[in-house]
Image (tube, rainbow, N blue to C red; front, side, top):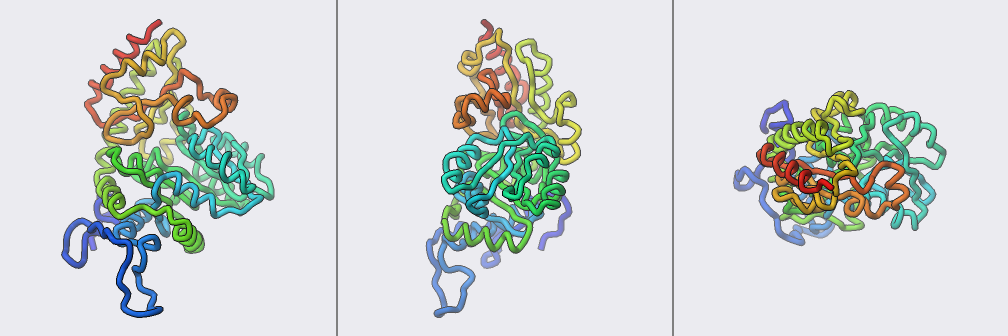
Amino acid sequence: MAVYKEIESAVIHAGIYGDKYTRAVNVPIYQTSTFEQTGIQENPQWEYARSGNPTRAALEALISDLEKGYKGFAFASGMAAIAAVLTLFKSGDTILVSNNVYGGTFRILDKVFKNFDLNYVLVDTSSVDNIKENITDKVKAVYIETPTNPLMNITDIKAVSELAKSYGLLTIVDNTFMTPYLQRPIELGADIVVHSATKYLGGHSDLVAGLAVVNTKELADRMYFIQNSVGAVLGPFDSFLLIRGIKTLAVRLDRHASNALKIAEYLENHKAVTKVYYPGLKSFDGYELNSRQARNGGGMISFLLSDNYDYRKFFKSLNLIALAESLGGVESLVCHPATMTHASIPADIRAKIGIHDNLIRLSVGIENVDDLLLDIDNAIKASAK
């Protein structure tokens, strides 16, 4: 067994390393739907690929180790992982949710689980007092993103977890933006961590996957039952790709974050930009808190373009940076939250929380930062009214 202390080594060596049968350094792709059994009722480790697959199991062990959890689970998408976590709750329960949560999370709560009387309340979770004021006997969990998507609000994971535990509630953290390389919510007291692994963990815009990690055997048993029963599992080939992507997580995120900081500083001083949302900026409201619970500000930036500039022309004038859904790949991507990632949120709620039409979200890639700055500068100049 490999000996290591730091996460830069863990992303390569944690979980199930290599193949014990051939001594290959990579876990093989076990592309099979079923497994031969030696006898009736002998409870084999592997029986049917929905219930378990060795490649998927290696991925699940890896994310559990990286998040310092009890057990990990791999799903066919980030939303499948979130749906599985929400299925832990019962009709009549209420979940407190960060008020500018990802639009897909809002949609599944508002349009799917609400049909089964699983309710939610949108709360500014950056204030622990706001959370406390909304706790009732029906509330069973607090679901937070930190930083939030797309306004980068920072929530104190440790404080929220302590408050939740005092009321017997679960704390669920979407750690997609930060990944375990930058932030580990379970170490700060969270019970469940979810990821859209499509993003930074995969890192190359070539797969769709979701991960969840829980901190106790009781939650693990319940999550496995849901995963196996519903069956939205990740296939072996995508599991292999995700393991491969995670191996370079540390070096990629170092570059994402260094590029993002330089671009955020540039935008902060640009006359065309009225506000920059980036946790790595010392002027950002959540900078101090984020610095305590995360390694750095990450690779995501949102900013407001001045009314003197046409945001539609800005998007059309970009050359290197692609207008696209998703984030966290090696290539830089830009999106318009109001009509893309958060279009499912009603306009009045978007306006109330600050998702305006001139809000732009940038997933900073690992290209040369000067090329990215030039592309942004040219697009801003072209968008002047």
